[in-house]
Amino acid sequence: MSTLETAFAFTVIITFLTFLITGPEELVLDCIEDVKAGDEEIGFFIDDSGLIDSTDIGGNVSYNTSPEKLCTYVTGISDNYRIIYGAVASGGAADETDSQE
Image (cartoon, rainbow, N blue to C red):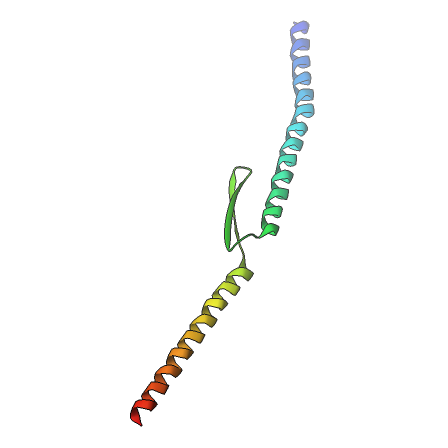
């Protein structure tokens, strides 16, 4: 009976030691993969290639929007609208004054 108990105790101890060796290894490998994905994601955000861009990083789709470029784009549209509206409004007002004379 003591041989069976000893075998069981050694099995538990060896299983525990195996977990202590392989558990942290798996954790470290997961951390390394997370660091690589984080580095790739930071590089993607720093690249800032367009108004809206997306890429697959580590099995997840990351989206990048550029507020500065979007603001410049909207400001450009607004400025163009004001220029065109100002030209049409001043041209229309000039035509009315010419027809009244």
